[in-house]
Image (cartoon, rainbow, N blue to C red; front, side):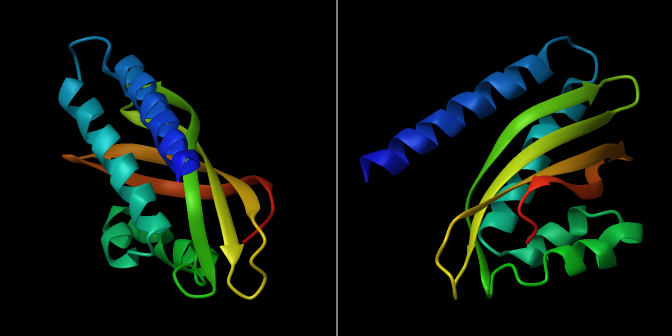
Length: 141
């Protein structure tokens, strides 16, 4: 139980540092705040299998690819944890690239696997939208 608390505290510290850096500078502050909210809600939604909350944040051109990539999530494949491990934010273009480490398991195996994904986000109109999510390294789902 203590291990999970330490892990969550560590994630909170990473999130805090991540978003403090993003928050530097006054211009585009609202867009940056929405990025934080969107990235966290999106990855929490994936973690807990709430695809109905996640899909509206995926660009319409990429929904089918996204669904295919995550077709077993929430059923056979369970996400045990995720971590935002790096990012690149472009304030001028209002875009961001987020590297996410996903720790997951298949219920039939009960062995932990790790996958690193690259998420590309763009600020469109008044919302952050996931443009692409690609496999970077680790084990494929």
